[in-house]
Amino acid sequence: MTTGQLTETSAGPGATSPAGAAAARPPRRRLSLTTRRAWSFYVFAGPWMLGFLALTAYPLGYALWLSFTNSDGLSKNSRFVGLDNYKEILTDSETLHSMARTGVFTAMTVPLTIVAGLFLAVLVNQPIRGRGLFRTLLYLPAVVPPVGAALAFKMIFDRDSGSANGLLDLFSINALAWLADPYARWVLIVLTLWGVGNVMIISLAGLQDIPKELNEAARVDGASPWQSFTRITLPLLSPVIFFQVVTGIIAALQTFAPLLISLDPTPKGLGTVPESNYFIMIHVLNQYLVDGRYGYASALLWVLFLMIVAVTFLVFKLSKGAVFYSVEPERAKTKPRTIGGA
Image (cartoon, rainbow, N blue to C red; front, side, top):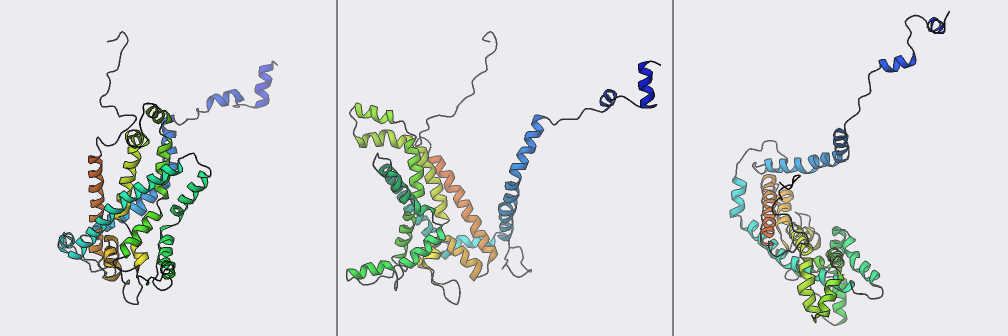
């Protein structure tokens, strides 16, 4: 008996060798690089996409549908009213006045915060001892949640027990009603400037990104510090300032802090808000919770959203030629070269 016959006999009839079994199995199919990248994208972006659909897209769509109804949020007998809510916005004097106050507040606070943040950034960018400590102290107010900051300011400027009137009492000055007109708007502006540390940090990052050689060369050429700042620093800092203008306008148009600062809770309704601080978001909340006009309030929110989009688009249009980018985008695609220069 030969060796091959012995092997076949010991393995039994119909048995195959290990090498033959491996050859008989089909090769495992591996996913392509493109497929693996697609799966990786959906695994990591999936939670965000689900959150966006559930917490942003659906509420926006539902609010858009409510804006065409007379829903009160409780009754199921709401009916479709078309564009009646939007037509009422154009004729409602209270709505138009609240929008005007919001616009005035935006026009006042956005330039003030940008200028104050840039001024502080220039100061803490100087080579002085302990500047890290100063940066930390100036930035700390920006870390405080807006709700906590508003409530703290409400206690500070309280007429009866606030520390602001306590300070005035030291100089024999009568107590002031800080949270009522005409002082309520200025308290709100002070609160907005109190959190300017966020703007300062962004401006500081922009200042540190500017090459020092440019200012040194200008100083050698005889330029004054003010000329170096206006001719070199500001143009190179214009993209940062432009970003702060856009985000500042969007945030100011949605200001909600006046409700926490000047609201005087009463058993009926939401309380008393000074007329100067009765902004569009306060009006929207009043329509939702007090009047129960969910349809009209949803229409107000959509009009505010369209206003923010329009103002942002206008700012982008006006910024052309005023914002300096160190790397300009390509204006035309270059023709690809081939072998031989053809």
